[in-house]
Length: 202
Image (cartoon, rainbow, N blue to C red; front, side, top):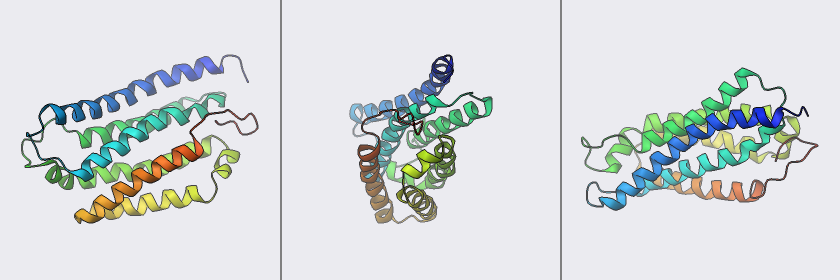
C-alpha cells in the first residue's frame, strides 16, 4: 500500500462525514423538536421507526466505509460516487424532517403524502450499495453470502410496494422489520472492525 493512501482516504472521509453529519443533525433536531413541542403535531410510529432506520443507517455507513481505506489509487469518480451515497442519507433525513409541516394535520399525513419520494430514495440505495460493495473487491462481496443480494432484492421490492400503497399496517410492519434486521445485520457483520489484509475490508 502506498504510504499516502491513509491521508487520501482521510481527505475523502472529511467531506463525506460533513454530509452525513448534516443528515444526522437534521434527524436529531427533529426528534428534539418532538420533545420540545409534543402537542404541535400528532406523531406517527411508522415515521419514528424510519427516523431510527435512517439515523442508524447513516451511522453504520460511516462505520463500514472504513473498508475503502485500502483502495489505491483513489479516482475522482469513486470519490463522487461515495459522496453521492452520503447525499442519499441526507435527502432521506430531509424527507422525514421537513422544514415545515404546517399544511398537514399530523406526521402520518405528511409521511403518507411523501412516501413515494422517501421510498424512492430508499430504493436508490440498493444499486448504490451494490456498487459500493463490489468496489471493495470480489472477496468482500462473496464474504457476505447469499443473504446480501437477497436482502437488496427484498428492500427494492418492498420499497416499491411501500411507495405505491397507503396501507398503514404494511408501512408499520415494513419499518419495524427493516429496523430489526438492520440491527441484526450490523451486530453480526460489523460490530467489530478488523481490517483483513487478504480481503481489503474491515
